[in-house]
Image (cartoon, rainbow, N blue to C red; front, side, top):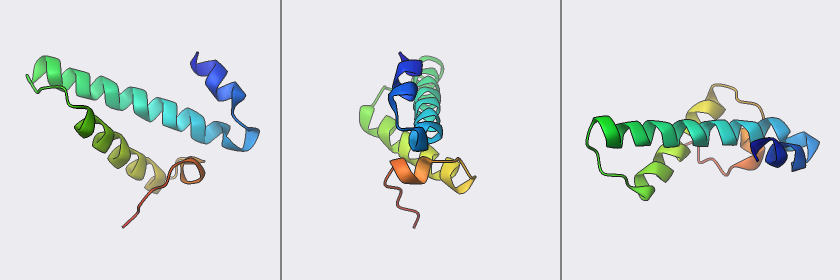
Length: 75
């Protein structure tokens, strides 16, 4: 499924699409671990905030293509 999403992206957006897939998966995994191991209640709003914060960090670190796919408020 993920490969199909990446392949169906325009060539200019493939690296960014892959970055979005990876950071979303990573954020869901971390959120799940917090729920399981820290007894933190799952919360979609906090998960979305975590994904946005992670995207900003990845963008600042030089992740190729994220800036063209995501509206990142860098302030």
